[in-house]
Image (cartoon, rainbow, N blue to C red):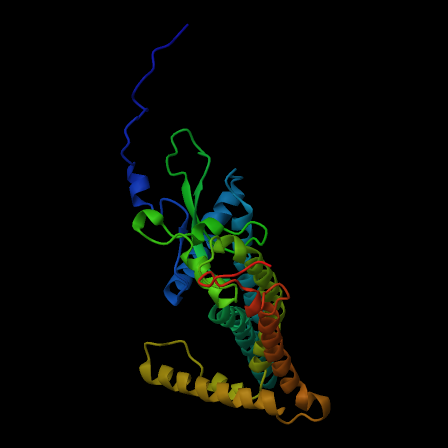
Length: 338
């Protein structure tokens, strides 16, 4: 028996729904790699890691994926850091005055260590990516917004689109080459980005297929840079933790306050933070009151971190596959084959 088709829930109109109109992106979109974009992506990931993604996982949503799992790594990091600091601070009221002071000092240094660890671990990656971009034109941190079309959780569910933030070279085997091409319909040169990269890495100009020429070299640079970032970022993070455990921070802890509405006290706190930061950096480098190998431990750690970044950049820029200038054919000149 053939039943009549109801048109109540069927729409053949070419017009977009209200939800589609409200979407920030209608397709995978290359984003500018600047501070504003990075902050917006960070805030979006942080908010979703504590709200949307855990809710999807706990209810067993079929749309929960590996990207969301990795993003939620922020949650145990922050909760675990808070619990580690609470071990020293929460029970301090049961200690003697001296023990209470020592416990608070240790807890505060742990808090600074967590803060400096996160800041230096992420900020140090720029010591690899920025020089590589300057010398080759390859932005290994180039972000893009990926539009995900999810399966409906309910028969009446229409909000089935979500946005994920990825990087163009996140996958070495399958980079998003398509996002690096320019739009010819807008009068742009299709291979403009690849042409600039080819020129910077010494492959010449006016190449017929610059994209095919530079892709193997880009992959090589991305692989080397990824290894360099992994090594150097953890060394810089360790330097951040060591910086947080220097004695000059005690002066800051004595006036520390988060009550920004009390302007004078908060201003004094910030001034003390700056002075303690400078003194602590000097203490880490000079070794403070330590003797023997401990006196030079700070220098060794800072030197290893700086050297890892430098070697990482030099290694990424070097390639035995890069032709010399004599190997590049200048198409503006004529050649005779003997």
